[in-house]
Amino acid sequence: MPILAWRNTVALAAAGAALTGPAFVTPAHAQPAPTPATAFTAQVEHAGLSRSQATSLQQEVQRYLDQLGGTQVSANRIDWLDGHMLVAVPGEKLARDLRTGEVASGINDCDYKNFCGWKGANFTGSFWERESCTYHEIPDGWNSGGSWWNYQTPGTVARMYGKSYNLVYQTKPASRDYEVFDQHGNWGPVWYVKPC
Image (cartoon, rainbow, N blue to C red):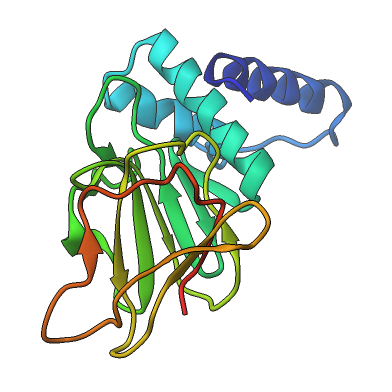
């Protein structure tokens, strides 16, 4: 739902509850619990996003939700049971969680036992992290460039597959002694990643 529509939805729901809800009086100091929509609106306002940036960001988040599933937990973060995604704010080089301010600016942001990917080269743009050993579809729009890090347990190899599940590339085995990453990858032929 676009950011601008969140306020209207919340206002309509509150108005409907006032008209049809049970007849009881709440203390004057009682405040309704914040909804995700109001929390997301507060996040984009606090981050200083323009209306067009906020709308564009929510549309991109919604595209990823429609494609990959998950739960939107902040204005630009999607969580899965085995990972998460931070969607970069339009016009910004690095992805940052508008709820916490955390920036996914490099390989140090990849959690151990995960395969992490960035839309852009040199760990820039939207950030995607997955742990479970299954086929994960990469986000739509990651058609070229990019970067990734195989930060699995030592010896684990991550594999990337094409549209027909044909093997396109596999990383070197993960190691505690050296970092297994590619700052200048190519998402173009990749449709799926299997972290282990």
